[in-house]
Length: 495
Image 1: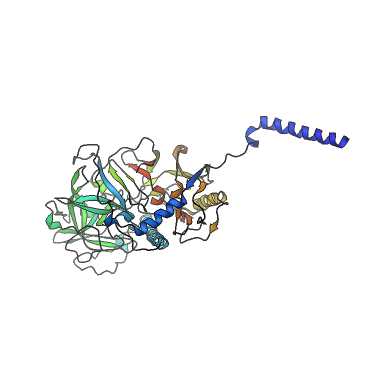
Image 2: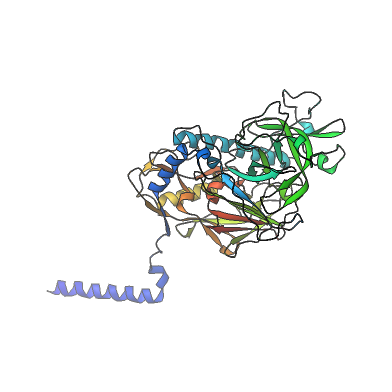
């Protein structure tokens, strides 16, 4: 009886102490908030993966659609231009019959692009000039281009195409959208070597606004690789994956759907072209260099929204439109070494609503041009500095122990077998920018199918020093680059 009374007294004492401690130190005894989560619709994404394999653009209604601008259709600088933006799958039927093979093909192209971006930056940081490099052995005729070249910025996957008009009268063409390169170009007749494209090849003789660029012009001197023939400027662009384009450098009229046109835009008229540009007529460079489309039309801003690349839907590429009011805004940072890339002020990451522990300044761009984070619509999978990637992955894995893990695929080291699930709830992943503002990603933007059997992988990969926010993470988000105010806005569900 005494023992029972003693036990009761001890329990009462302990309860009293716990109660007092909870009043004095309420946060020390409270539990951590449950992780924030997002739902991944496994059934819907697998259905979409199967659909893209059988989708036939020729029998669909997803051919050119034009968007009217909110401003008057004018060629004056500052007007709002808007053109349709499509995923590759809605333009050209894939030759792959197995979704895993399609994914592996995309990842291979993506890795080539990332490698060449890293090479481009390394050459710039080390002050290596083209004249110091050995000429590339090519079959280009001597009177064309024989200047030394190096790996440029690989067009890579080229998963998104925009529709613009070239010439007078304007002919409409699908062009690869690339924020990671500057030179605009299109395949031209006569074409000694051309890859397959969806549209007829551009014929300069049919355009009244076609005009060769002279060798002594500022436009010609702005090219990294140029030559001169009969007083006319020739260009060459060779990409890191081995793709290239060679031809005449000219000026032409470029039109943007029903929203206006710009005269005298410098672009390459390629007579010898080869590479991973299949289906597109050429490339629209949206980088920060002087020859990019954005620079030439003196755009104060531009924005794009990328639909799911396995979707047949489309969105728009807009010039000179303001940032949506609900945008998560981050600073746009200038590199002293390379003007092409758009660096963004990423400060951190979070998983499940909790910050990932990272060293301070891990994403900073230093004065020598090393590090930093670029936003690139041509890179598919987001690359993070290795230490940051490892921390993000480990945080995600620690909160997904209930999901059946499986072996890695290609560059992915964290994958799951979701074949028995119709949907799963996973921890949210977010990019954190200045002032603690964060962009929560939809689950489908970081846990993606890599086959049609239900294998999903965490769609991030490690990188040496440079980090890249790729288009898988950008899907469904309007990315707005305010060039006048040096800021970037991210607004979800604005396609």
